[in-house]
Length: 426
Image (cartoon, rainbow, N blue to C red; front, side):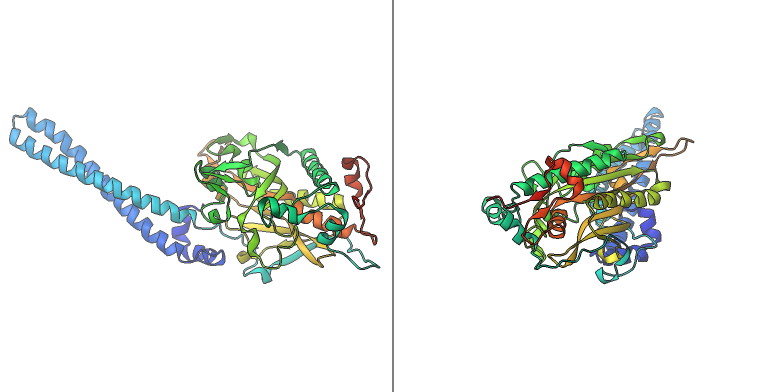
């Protein structure tokens, strides 16, 4: 979350960020509640001061034999105590409303973030040559059916639409990709975790998934647990509520997880096959860093995600997202998109985000400066490193052959026992 002092002093700019990120009118409501909350705090503090003063005078009155004054003061003390209790109850309600509104204020976009919606996203880099084909291309759904590596109908029979079922060499390639990605990140200094796939409300709030996105999550009401939408949630919350030493920083984490998002079916035509699903596998990379170094860490995090695409020799481009197309919690976002020839379009495979101290405030992650002084909030960053469904789409469609077989990228062949080609199962 943002600092309330910053919101008070920059209300118009914060309101603009709220409008861009789909949270209009929150700032005005928050500032009104904030003023009421401060007035009540001041009033309660004045009454507590008065009560302390009267309490001293009660004892003095009885000590001096002035019983009548003592009883009057005791009555006044009881009245003030009752008023303080009433104020505290109301103050608690106001504080809960204040906190709810604070959690609905999005992060501010960085100064170099383009202003506007999706049409204002800026392509800032491209890598690789898009292959030309001398035969009619198939998309990943057709390839998956011919080769017996993707079975959407049976996945739907088990769980409903939007739950893919990989099989045979499709499943084997997914497993190989996970191993490749984790190995690549581990070699770059990222500590691997195998996190729980369920997270409690505090963890979801700390990583800024809720309340903004709560309706898009799978929720187990009896236990108040959520199926994670990304392993960013457990990785970011590894240090929740802790005060680190400056020498501990930076911290680099990576993890594989299954991920779950209910919103997958709401995007029209982009729901075919693996394009947008309710459950998908992903390798995540997370950084917890010194605030003075987070912009450099953001650039190196982008390079880390790019490294996997270059190993796979997949053409891709880098987008700098505009303010209206970035996530609720992010201050600056790069998207990586791979070219998928069967779909004939660019597909997002990673978002690389710098949250500054936004998540750290919510999760209460700080560090002690080596030179002394007050503790400071860390900065957090994360990127998909990478998301599997669309990587599989790009590999299958990019490496397809005229006979509908798929050549396995060189870097994946050792992870698949030296196999070089995916052929029909039957």
